[in-house]
Length: 86
Image 1 (cartoon, rainbow, N blue to C red):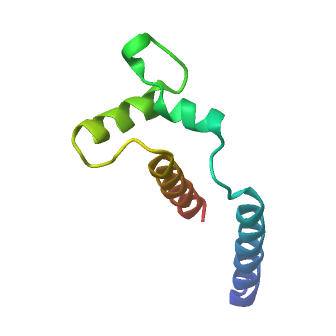
Image 2 (image 1 turned 90 degrees about the vertical axis):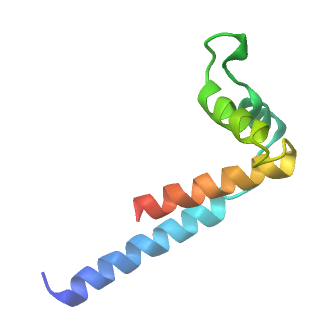
């Protein structure tokens, strides 16, 4: 494969990802925020790991438990996921 083909395919992939991110990026709704705040204190539950990590960070005074913090953490995780895919 030539160097131009690789750059063209990489550009198409980046464009498709940018369009997908533009359509998918939005603030978490109340249901999603509630799942971020659930942790393992009440037994084994779905999505408890994110809540347990969030609880550890709030107890260490690194984060404050608010809707803005949940949205910020969600955007950081989403950006890390997008970078990993690229």
